[in-house]
Image (cartoon, rainbow, N blue to C red; front, side, top):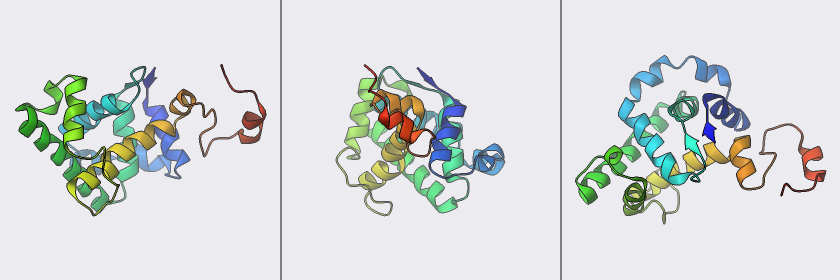
Length: 171
């Protein structure tokens, strides 16, 4: 299952972020490097179930929409990405993109983000958890595709709640 730009827009809409902000994203795209987007895609491949293929378009649309109006939040995301990139070089001697998924998982765990309590102004591990891990997981599980994988046929923000909750679960 591939996640698309449309899925990212749906995830943003469920969080109350206006899609028109995503469609005019020139400034933010200049501030996020290709390496930043690639790093997020590579981390999404680690965090998402193996049946999911996070596309560059999905990640880029979500990040641009989520961070467009908040320069401080964007700076913190970039800082958390640098922590992961430094950890990759320190632990393996290679950039994150040169690693297989299992080794990327080990690098992400080496940041401590998997065990940390999310805190936007906390330690490096807490910021990795808050800005990268939690945001990527939120982006995925608030899409209808991601929600269906965990049995939630109607993620928050989508129509049809009463009807969906009265139906028998999918088997």
